[in-house]
Length: 224
Image (tube, rainbow, N blue to C red; front, top):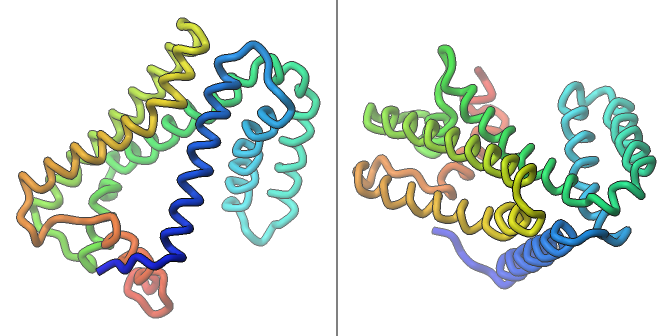
């Protein structure tokens, strides 16, 4: 059972406030003709962070690699700074479409070959490595659903960015993305409770708990 403490409540409230502020700034600057230096910096920061993170994962021992990549990305952004002030929506588009495309590929690739679908892996983490045949079938279908969802979101974002007005694209990408994602989660939750027995249902909290347990020294997942 999850206990809600004042510290947890404050943390969640702070994150929610930051998300709302970031969403508002993204929408206001994406729909306008020009943006402030702050808006460009806020839009650029996630791109630099992703470059650093990806290069860090290539080889964590080579610390110069993410540092060099982050510096290079920063220099390129600085070089194009004035142009980006008049097209900051491009940065937000790259974030939005790129994130959804990457997630779609992540889910989709797990459906190819001999490996398990991604949602099936989540279920194994939550149920200590044991899943029923019904769970295997259902989680594969959910993995397909998420693949289609993220792919369609990236495609629609691209179409609106290229063909519609900036305010139409920004409304979809910055204001509707989270509500649509919430509807997707809610729909999957309702379907899960309809087609799976209680013992086979997986909560996000169970998956997080299983992931943490799997990363502990001496766990079966680490011994493999």
